[in-house]
Image (cartoon, rainbow, N blue to C red; front, side, top):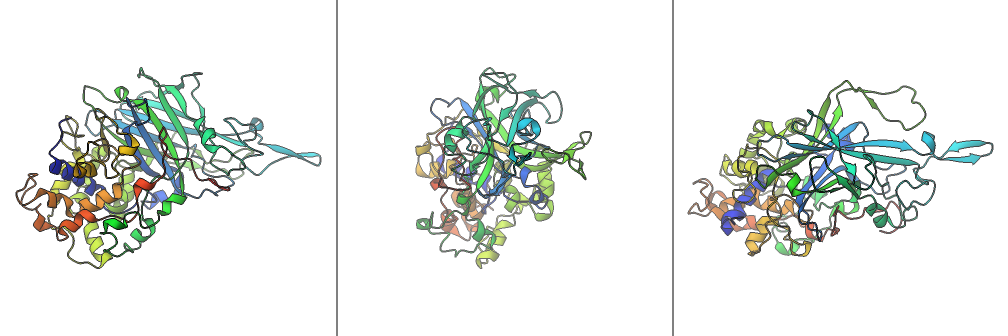
Length: 515
């Protein structure tokens, strides 16, 4: 990779992030409709070169769903919706259209031949009310009353056209896989980490010569954000969120939550085409346009059966973090969730004329701190195309998605800069493998976005227009001056516990007992 000059690269990276939003929360309950359907609510999307030892030729894709899970949420916990499709899309030619789609589907099965676990009560065999009848130690454990299975399909071309081919077990050829039950507690699951690890499967991918790995199951929430105070009109003094010594001073409220992760690790050669190493990625979830509820459900697991002649309707979309929460206007949030990257021009004014800086003025009681370089065309260019010489496709149609240069080598976890490319460049390091070049779990997207949206780009551009962004994007357009570089949310992403291996997100918190 030709490295950009340090100041230029840092700011172009910051610009891309600014459009992705400058406040604090990844995609949790971000739009009116999706709050009614948490099972298909995408929370975070990660895409990065694998940094597990011996796996650096692979790309990891993680799509999180079902936000803000309380570990004690029994007795049914957080099964995925069998009447939904969960997709991870890859654009590998820069035209804002998916070339590959990996689809996760789910199926619920009751034990005991569909009757469920029963106990002899007097002269009757009576179904039990719980998800388990005893301790669980492995996949398909006989004490598990409800087994959720999943399959993964690959489709080439448009997400709803062509033929979907299943990924198959490299060991058995099976196409359906056991999903681990959620972490009910330490008495039911005394070794959850080992139990979950047995649900990472080696699979063959049609059209790919290298075996891949898949996982679908509960994980500990890995996103760090000062969630409550931020949406309470940024209920923290400006002196706190501009003091570098206060990073990590406040607790991360999401540290006590779980999520459900859909994971795929696939060789980079199976994702790229035409010699271009840059791929774009995003995740979506879809429901049938109509559903039919039974007035008197039959014995067995009750689900709402879809009208299988009805089309799928996309209800969730997530690529870059933070976009729908704090960039897209409230009236267009459902529209954004139902849209595809190819149509992103309709949301252009939310980037050229962002409202977030003005809202921060109101919330902080600090009028006049918003940058004045409107329209923010500097942000549009970098946000929608990727960064030249870092992660911009050779031919690109502007669209919102994560973009990853698969030629850039991964960096071991201990050497990763929590501020991604921006922090690396400011520190004079060599970590170009982080956000916005994809996104790793350690990347602190909140702090990077805060700096960018409040004028970090124009401060670095300088009076000489070093970045070629024009007279409007100069330090004079940044009322906060150098203070713009100090903004943070007082929560430390780097302190989040993670795994050194696929699926990287940590063991979920137990519903009872100690983690």
